[in-house]
Length: 240
Image 1 (cartoon, rainbow, N blue to C red):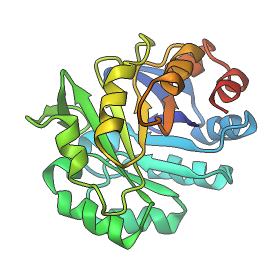
Image 2: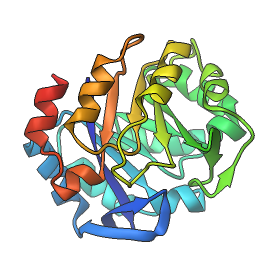
Image 3: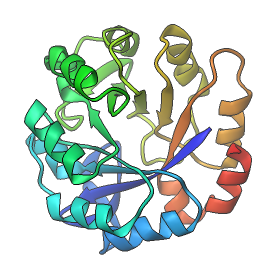
């Protein structure tokens, strides 16, 4: 199982928020590049970066911070937040992003996702952000009437590298993973699933790995990692 330590960007800083609400932001590092180096030095093989301002505004806002992260580490970076066009995707891939995460357009303009996945196979991930059973868009500020499996199935067999399933109701809360919900989606589609939202301890990683059915490909680590409730060494040991 691959672990993805998260770096959420707001106003150029590394923050954590609750339920995606930018007004709840707690700053953990004024230098996202330093934070990325810390995760790389801790042994992680990927970094998960989200431009929170960009997700809400529909365009890149924290470009400078992302570029600094890309310059700071040699491990692959996956990036989401405000990426809404083929030009946006191409720009970030050319800048060195290993995987671009598309969320809002997966609901509103799925053909962009399909075209991107054909152009850059395995370098596109779809973010499926779920609140009360329905997929949210626009930086989680709007809700659709679609469920996660319906959205995920749109992208079978087009070259999408991963589905990042975020449980908004638990995100930023360290309530623990809803393993059954992540597992149900993994069982329903062939695209690898990355679980996000609510991780509290290494036990969540253990439970993800132990569930019957299709294996969960990875997990995003957020507040529990920043709070010290889980250490990089322990997380990586359990995931290995």
